[in-house]
Length: 125
Image (cartoon, rainbow, N blue to C red; front, side, top):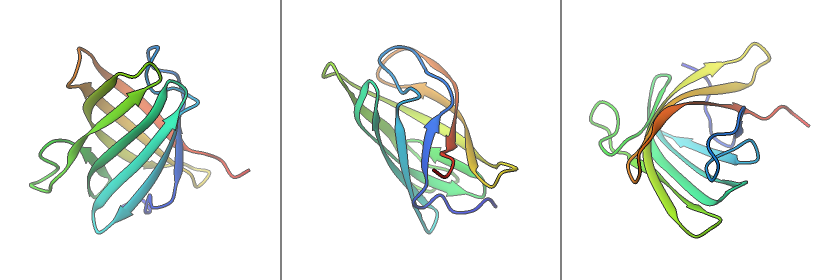
């Protein structure tokens, strides 16, 4: 299993559609006993929250969690005052330089759309 995500700050490697998560968005992850949560903001997102579970190297931000474990979808507030919600399953990957990458498969619940994205731990400054 990859190392803990607790305290890591990750950012998308590419912009998504306008009004969504982008390269200026920062995710701060927390992890304890198989539970994962994160706060995020930046770019077009004023505030977002993820709550889910981790089983081995798979994170589930899903209404019913992974393998019977509880979870919840992500919810975000955008700059123009609207909200969006969706769910996501991410695979944790250890990079050769010691950082962590999450390969994500997501789907909106509050609107049409689904896709994939990648977020990576920010390099040390």
